[in-house]
Image 1 (cartoon, rainbow, N blue to C red):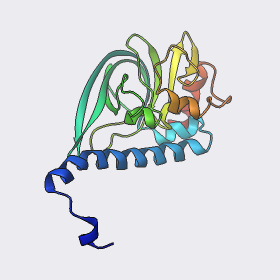
Image 2: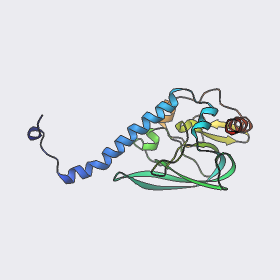
Image 3: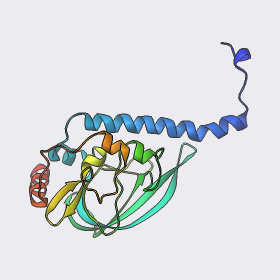
Image 4: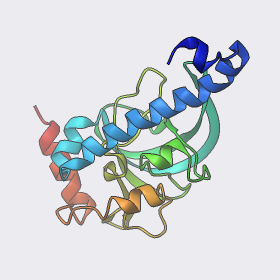
Length: 198
């Protein structure tokens, strides 16, 4: 087709479509990356190598906001954790990070589409966080595979914990966590520390 038969798009229409197009491209890229990470069963060692920061802590607060990326405003959530133990990476007693998507984002929420978990205030977690990207956002290595709920000394994948606020259908569609996950925090802790020691 030529430009004559296709017609033209006004500048106003193009500007209106731009945020949706950027969000769609980011969603497809994030989904491909998440699916690639989840294609092979993750192990604690591979999650540790991928993560910039591994810690155990309690979610203290959740704040919904937005971030501007390539002219589009994407919903995000900022989480603050009180850290009990840093297993990889350095930090203070409080750690704050921003993740794409929101806890109540609905079925078209970008974080939900790529299977990212959400964290509930007052709940203890172990997280394997990737290095922050250029927009300052991060997420667990392997999407929800790098996030565990801590119940006493037991670890439960956010896939399997009915009380965890995980990313809904996208996580459930990918199935349950591998049976090789450590059952206790101490077992996971030893594995991570063995992986990071010089």
